[in-house]
Image (cartoon, rainbow, N blue to C red; front, top):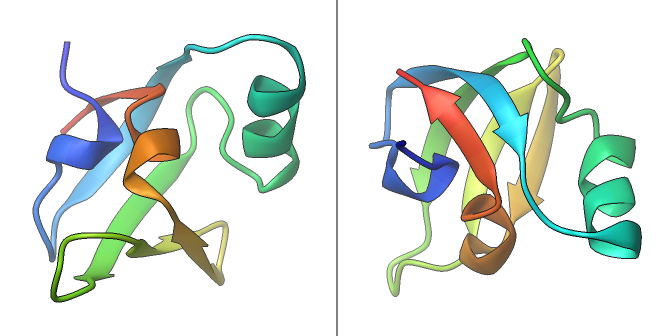
Length: 74
């Protein structure tokens, strides 16, 4: 399955599943990334990390390592 890390700039994806355990998964959910939410990839830093996203109407910056834990459907 495709992860959030694989989504290109300018695309929107829908979260299907969160991987990870305990505190890491909780932190991602606390940022508003939960099953069924739409995420728009606004920018990616020149060296590829981090990513700037729009989630639930606000801007969020997420590391690629965390983005790999979010399975999406484009």
